[in-house]
Image (cartoon, rainbow, N blue to C red; front, side, top):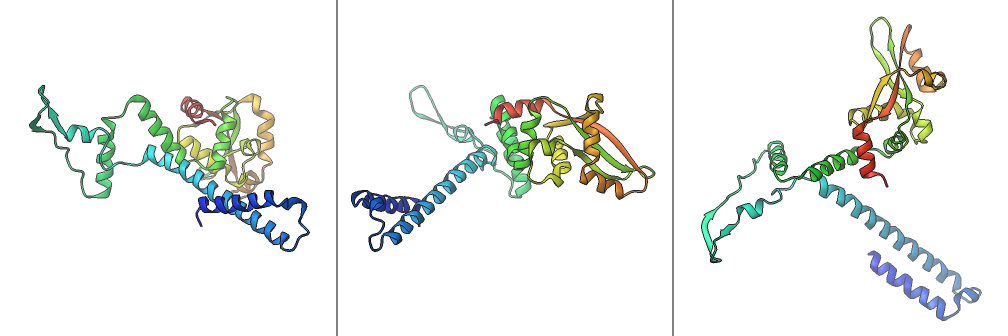
Length: 251
């Protein structure tokens, strides 16, 4: 059932309730059933409206990042030009057709679009692409990093072979209040891969936080995986790209 119809039915029931002093007459026969119907219709309508609002937000992100079959401005370039008298000239600019192979067509569309993008549009395209790939927990981590503070990270490897068993464990997950704390190392690695965060050398002023991090369950389990663990400490911080991205995207 569409949200518009649901809202109309809910409105009719609400109007009936007002006209008949329904709130003061719940003891009348059938009043309980009418109340349940009204609440059910209101809930269904609100749920449908929420879906529509969420869909509109997702479509906006897709508009920023989807590859068009015809890049912006190409239609105008392909059209007939007019001379001073207003008549159409015989010369036309025909756009080169895109390849039929999906991968080649995708690259061709990107290259064509690059010739029409302004600096601001190119930046927004990049930011929208990154935003679509972030998880909710990663957004929370970035919001915490946005204040410019450093957070401890550790890498654990097997000393003899150098095999890494844990990469980018950090206390930032608990600080940010992420839902999946066991995945913080993955979240941190992804933020670094996106260029939004970076890992620097060990910071002496984080000594207490390093000790707390070493008691983390994920870290202790990783230590148990190797006989002679090698622990490397570092500091996690936001990058200039991360700062600009946050300023552009922060709610």
